[in-house]
Image (cartoon, rainbow, N blue to C red):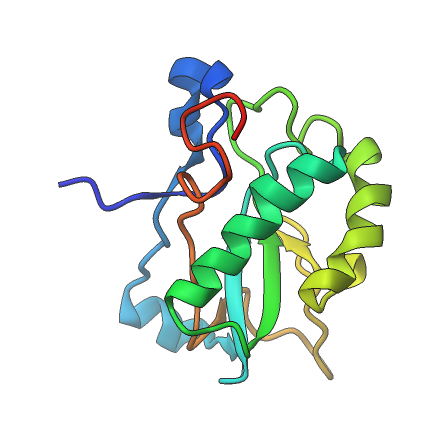
Length: 163
């Protein structure tokens, strides 16, 4: 049984490469967590990993990123939680995504992120975490009591080119 979810909206033009968006959280052995420890987000936060379909275009940003994010939060009753976004990069790299054109995406998402109650300075990637701690770093793991993922068919167009 396949239990993966899609990190972002699906662009039908990606064809077979769309499998790169499949994701499932890594489950670690208890022994590893006990030996290194972890940091925990508060219960007032929700962690949401996502892949931006074409965030350099405000229309795509709203309909293919923000609408699915809001819909996902709404489905699970998490709209009132503070959003902790983690922008995910995938392999192979998807054309027309923020992964390939981040310099074009950054000014647009910086302008629009406040609509989601966050800003570009608070958004992490899986390789660059925007998590500040006091003192010496003790662990590379951050756990969240609330999380949501699976934006694939929640865009305005699903498997169609446009809505």
